[in-house]
Image (cartoon, rainbow, N blue to C red):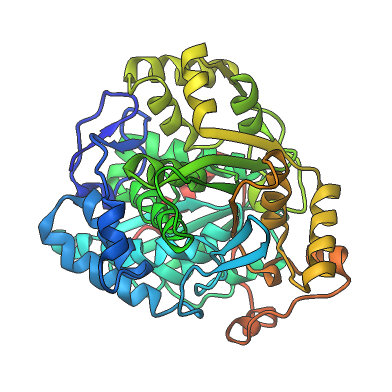
Length: 462
């Protein structure tokens, strides 16, 4: 398997190189040069095919490198041993034709654990093979940072810097990052939004001399391995609900950076019987507008009860632009160059039709989020985090007899105040994490300035 840039002006990479990559040197994102296929009929009758075996099997397909197969299997099995539920990603039935796919049973109580617990040791092994080390630098809207800290703190060949938007994530999300005592981890509060933090990270990667000097690597969903691993739980849900190719299952995905939604597209491309993928957004609705109207535009980022989705510039949307435009890198370059200059782009009608064939979208207000959390709690006793509530609310655009799974992306205890507002009850943080509520925090604050971030990296370089 080789990986090509969405902008077509960078050399193709191997799986091992992809493990350690950020954006391509030409500014694009890496994609597999061909789509592998899974045999759903064979998988259904394979003895012992649980979500663990399914995950490493899919990732091995995307690796296409037999010398990595044993490492991929080991990393996946060890990662899933750290999950608190033996089913890893259990399905919970809410009512007729409606389910939650619980993705928050990992070490940091969010879906980001699913991929990062696997990616981290594989990255570390790739570096060991090369007798090298890397500086991972990541922007987070809350959950990626915590999952990265938990996954990378024990990796001997990796240093980590995490940028979060100051005052725009929950206290629990922040403390999961800032209470670490790991010496290879540094946290930065950026005076700005997640979009600002993400733009700073992209600027550092775009400075090729700087990126090479500091051996920068990425663990945001711009890293392809994240997407490949996440595609597995879509396939697992289809298998669990016994979906055939002519009986498709739809999904509603709380969406910010479009990585989780694109993973659903990947699952569909490799053979899972998936119907519609609903991109559920809060009022930061750039993605919803792009899907509904074919216009994608940068706009102001508004603070909401679902902060991990307070994103207007979704990195992974470029991957879908590549697919929707027939994998033509020249078209993607022109679109992204225009977006960089004007802050907006318009999809060609044919490309928009491709997008609409796969995705639907729905914009959900905070008031609707609270109402859904309140209703579900009253009817079932179940507490939802606000992001999951956005996803569940968005299923209203499908018929009541259409089967749809909502991705439950985070444990409600990560958003104590929002859940309390909606239900009158504060969820308890699981015992293994309660220590973060009183532990000392350690982080630095920087302005929204690339020069300041470069200087910070330089001063802390090993």
